[in-house]
Length: 237
Length: 357
Image (cartoon, rainbow over the protein chains, first blue to last red):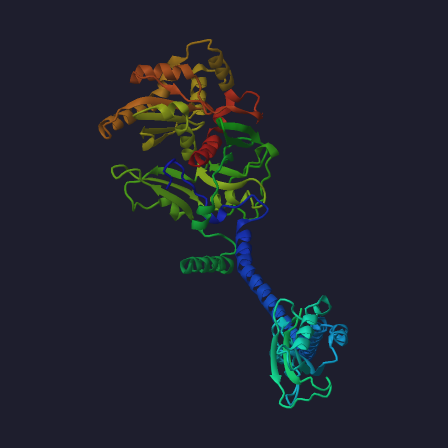
C-alpha cells in the first residue's frame, strides 16, 4: 500500500523487478558476503603466518645465542682480565709517580755530618707496608687486590736518623747534633724533609765514656740521639 | 562489544542464507530496503491498439518533472489475449536510446483485465475461473466499497519478460490503464489544488470512465460504453458526412453541431449527474469540480451541454499540463497537442512511479 499514491496498483512481482545494471545486486551481495567472510580469514592467516615467522626467528636466535654463549663467557673473562691488568698497571703507575728521589739529597749528608757524629741508622719509613708482602698470598683478582691496597692518595714518610756524637764534658748542649739539625734546615734538604714541622729529637747519654779521642784532661761523653723527621708525603696520583 | 559481535555474526549468517538459499532473487524486504528512488522513468503502454507503442520518458529534475522523450515507438505490440498466445520465448524489446531510462513503468490496456468495486471483502472474482489472475484489492475506508483490480497472470508475465535484466530499461511497475490514467490525472496541477469532491471523465476511444473523487480518493468508479470514436461516428451519421470530414468541420468551428451532440452526450452526462447525486447523498460532499480529459471531439459542445444539464463548468485537463519539455527533449509527434491524449496512459504510469518516489 502506498501512502502517496493510492491509485498505484502494481502487479509486478518482486522476482520480476530486475536491475538494468550489468552487475546484478543478487550477484554482488553474495560475493560481498563471501568477501566479508574471507577477509577475517585472510587476516587471521596473515597474522598466524607472521606469528609463525616470529616464532621460528626466535628459535634461530635462541640457537645462535647458545652458540655464542661460550664466546661470550670468553669475552667476559678477557674483559675481567683486562680490567685486572689495567688496575695493576694503574697501580704501578701510581707507585712510579709516588716515588720520591732521595738519593742525591742524602748524598749531601756527607757534607754536614762532622767527624764527631756517627750515624748508626738511617731509615726512611713509610706509613703502610705492601699488603701482600710476607706470608700473605697476592690475590689474583684485581678487585681483591684493590681492596687490600692502600686507598689513600697520600702516604706519610718519616726519616729516622739514629746515631751518636761526642760531646765535651763541660758543655751540656749537644753542639754537634744541633749543628747537624741546622744543616737539615738548609735548602739542600728541602726536597726531603718538611721545613715547617719540627723534628722529634731525643738524646740519651751512654753509660761508658772515654777521653781518648779528645786528649788528656778533657772529659768527653757519648750521647746517642734519635731524630725523626717528617718527610714530604708520597702522592699516589 | 559482545553485542556488536553478535550483530556481525547475525549479518554474516544472513548473507550466508542469501548465498545458499536466495542466490537468484533477493528477499522482498531486502529488495524494498535497497529499492532506489526513481527519478528517470519511461512509461510504456502495452495493448494500446495503435500502430506502435506509446512511450513517454519523464525525469525528475531540479525544476520538477520534465518530458525527456515522447513518441510512438515502432515495436510489435502483440498483447496476448490467451494463455497459449503468451509464449515464454517472447523476444525482448530494445528501445531507442532517448527512451532508455533505467526503469520502465508499464501499463496494460487489456480486455481481460478488470477494475471495479466489490460488494465485500470475500466477493469471489469470476475471472479467476477462466485463468490465473494477479489481483489487488484496496479499500480506502470502512464506509467505502473495496476496489479490486486484476490482470491475467500470462499477460503480466509476458509484459515482465519484455525487458530482461542487464539492459535498460527494466520493468519497475506494471499497472492497468484505468488506474494509470487516474494516477496521471491526480498529478494534474489544477486537480492537485482542487479541494473537496470532484467528478472526472476520462474519455477513451471506445468508452468513458467516470470517477467520483473525495479528497483525491476514488469513491465511485463507473465505465460508460461511449468513447470518442463512437461519438464521432454518431455525429457523422447524423450529419450524413464522413467521420474525418466531421472532425475537420468541428476543428474549424464552421457550424453549430450542438443539436447533433446533445442526444449522444446526454446519457453520459446523466451518469455524471447521478455521480454528483451519489456524492451529495451518500458522502455528504457534492462535487465542486468537474474535470474531463482524453480524446475529445467537439470540446465546446461538451461544455455547453454540461452547463445546460448540470449548471456547472467543466474543466478540460490536458495530459501534459504542468509538465514542460526538457531542453534536449525528443518529441517524435509533429503536433503533440493534437495527439497528447494517446500518451495519457503511458504518462500516467510513469507519473505514478515518480510521485511514489
